[in-house]
Length: 136
Ligand SMILES: [Ca+2]
Ligand SMILES: [Ca+2]
Image 1 (cartoon, rainbow, N blue to C red):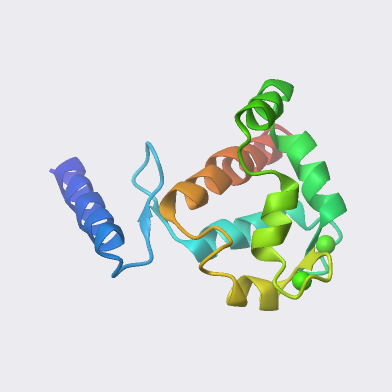
Image 2 (tube, rainbow, N blue to C red):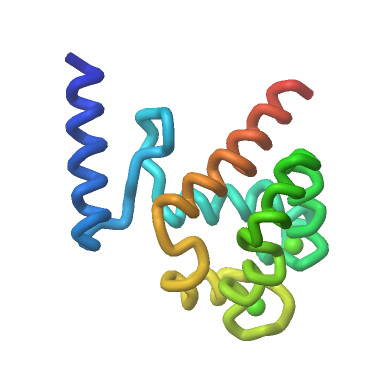
């Protein structure tokens, strides 16, 4: 019964996404609700290593090395999928080389704009960081 309710919740959330009315979805393979804010808060928590509330290019590059395997990085490169250059272009709205709160607030249409992007941030950064924390 509980799983039926969760499936129903997921379908309702997905319908809202499709309709463009909602700003949440379900994390892939789970029953967790995922939003852009959750994905970006996680990114800040685990990528902003000097805790200045901004993500620099250096921090983004370090996160890519820390959280993605060599094979995953090669796959992104070969497939031409979003790179750090593209992420900075999409997210650093004032072009100062850092992604800070004001950039995040102003970039909802370009920086992690949809569920798939939130899921990628959740899967490849947040959940891996949580797992690394548990293993330490
Ligand atoms: Ca930082
Ligand atoms: Ca900026």
